[in-house]
Image 1 (cartoon, rainbow, N blue to C red):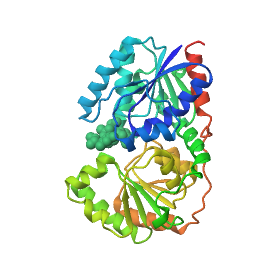
Image 2 (image 1 turned 45 degrees about the vertical axis):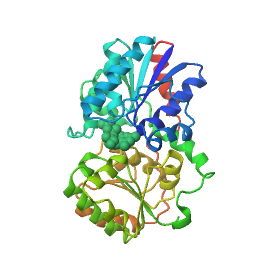
Image 3 (image 1 turned 30 degrees about the vertical axis):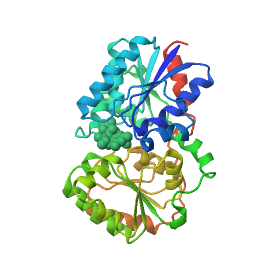
Image 4 (image 1 turned 60 degrees about the vertical axis):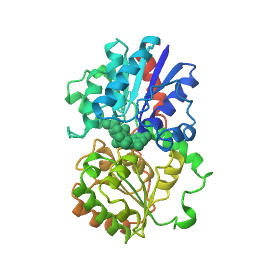
Length: 364
Ligand code: UD1
């Protein structure tokens, strides 16, 4: 049995790391393919160290581009890798361009594909990730869901029951593993920062950072938030590019209560959010991590593909930026020590269930 595991963008690394470790523990060989969708040291390399991952066996080095060119480049290069190997199955995670590109290639070569984090739906087809999710799920053989709403969505789309398997949230495996280790590292920026009172902001979605008017409004709102609680803002390269392009970077970075920093590695980031009082984000994974840690999360989007973080977690959607200040005030008025939440199978053992499902599917 030879399993191919795909990583490409930042949110993929913490999902594949525990799965690869579990395959290794059972003596099953894997080929780790990095598409190179993310390539900066702090968007990619640092995660391999922080997550104790083996170095990629194959690097496709595709880099940035339009959706079409990035997806196409991954397909062309990954097809060569599939033709050189005899993969029993390809495992893809999440909803990024690398996920759909590798799924299409493998399926057309007759290789079975398992999708980890299947079934999530924002029902917003303007999001490139939603297109990637729908297309990936529609052709994958094994749909491994993180929460039961995923199973419901797939059933509603007419997916046969035997393709769906509820395994739980793989991000939480990495989160729990990191929490055992973060105490040993230095809290980033502790020297010039009150470690007991700060908010973390991350933003990178096109809907928030690609339009100058929206960006302007966001800046004004964040400046107001910073008068209530200091902000640490590890800035995604896409966001930094746009702030610079629209000439807005200085107005944010020169605000006294806002600390714009480079993107952090995994352990530093877990450490940073673990001690924070509030998170404001448009990330998918962060909605889950804050739920598991019991930290209030305000998600600046009109929808979420992770509704369980609202119904069973600490997440709140802010679809109208005019509502942000009230939500911040409410979050900060509560006791900041919250209980971590545990939706079913967010227990640190998801990799075991995933490898069980894959081996069962392959009849081993
Ligand atoms: C991608 C995913 C998104 C995920 C996000 C996490 C898709 C469609 N989107 O969005 O779901 O939440 O990753 O980060 O796959 N860049 C760099 N260095 C890098 C990577 C990117 O400078 O290492 C810059 C480039 O200018 C690039 C831009 O960021 O053009 C966007 O990168 P890309 O991978 O296309 O999409 P993300 O916005 O990161």
